[in-house]
Image 1: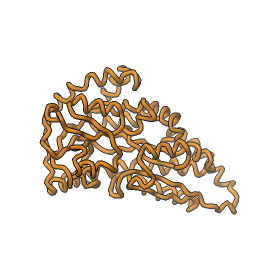
Image 2: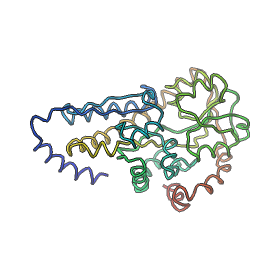
Image 3: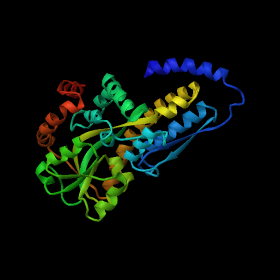
Image 4: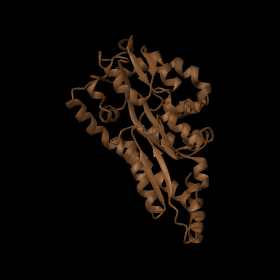
Length: 326
């Protein structure tokens, strides 16, 4: 990606220098995300807008649509494939229905820590999976974002061991790996769109869900739940994808600006996610959320069958071991 960006920079400069002076028609790009405007995703998209509009001297206007205004993450991916939406950020959990190989990143406990997570995403494995994502969604990946370290939460009882999850309906993302993971833990795993979670918990349709602390705060889930159990079963990867058909239609210098803005957005989103965590924990404790320690080894022991079931789907045990050892 970096070599490609350097090459495109040269082409883009030549194209910019020879562009006709009267080429003033503004290019409007529609970019969507399904979380609130307080979420780190929004910080990333605002940086994308800022850099792209500045780099193109206002020739490009980026319109942002947060809060699932243009539909769920799955609907946004369909929009990318059909070229009815220009860009979106989508969790690996919800992307797995389109790109089964991305379930590699959804395997429980596959990342030991945030540093290893970024080494995988920014290295050869991330590039390899990225090419598959681009092919199957007809997109260009502008970066890998994150939605933090995920933990299980509910309003009925503290979860300290897998046995404590028995009988609880827990919402997870649409990835078969994640659904099977929570079923292996002992929960009744279910999927629904992100925007339905609050009301579903409030009305007792589900007992809880899994998310990072930032989501718990900005989506106001703390109003309908109480116990946040530190399972740390997943560090969330979220590719920021741009319609390939739309990208190919842009002048070369605009393409370069899109890639540059994408790189800046990736950095901004990751930094926002990290900086929001400590503040979120403090506020959630003040709102009465109880943070429950767990014995992670008990949870890890439950998911061996999940690894065995999905090894071929995600590239084999050799690749899984490679990622686990980063």
